[in-house]
Length: 240
Image (cartoon, rainbow, N blue to C red; front, side, top):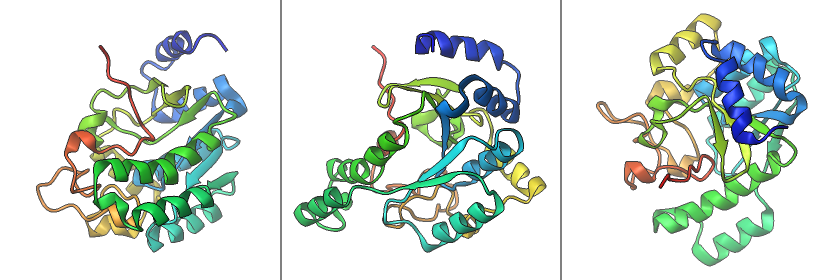
């Protein structure tokens, strides 16, 4: 593969004006088995799963089971695997790392400090993600600009500095209305918690419903400031 930044530039030119479905197809044409898709089973991820099934069913899908997910999330995972009979891998955190962290810092360490919360995310999410991305050059995810302050400058193709991969966000420019419209028109299975005010769904201990008038990411790590609300999966180095 050419230098990542050059490749990203070429992809931006090739995909200008394309729909998310076409972006996914082109991504597979470009990378083949060297691209996979990270699904957290959120609304956006369910849409991308449906699109992959249509145009690039050989793309490997994976999800990270942190051990702290909602029961509804597991139920949706089972339903999704049955509906889309594609390769769907599940990655778990290293048992020893979880045991040592909990033994030293407590089962709910993430409420104590930002450092502890990032430590927990690192053990339960970041390390498994690295394993999931070990053999690819690029990965697809369901990020959108409108999801959070930390994602306001998101591009469809970006360099993932933390994992040294090209990151692809086919829905980067979609609004929440675009998401809901696709779900309705294509009868996409989604987490029933969305209907209860949960917009962004992660670990049960770190996710709550969003109150009327709140930002759509307000339910994630609600005890922290908006600019701190990333788990490390989507780390982006500041410029300058």
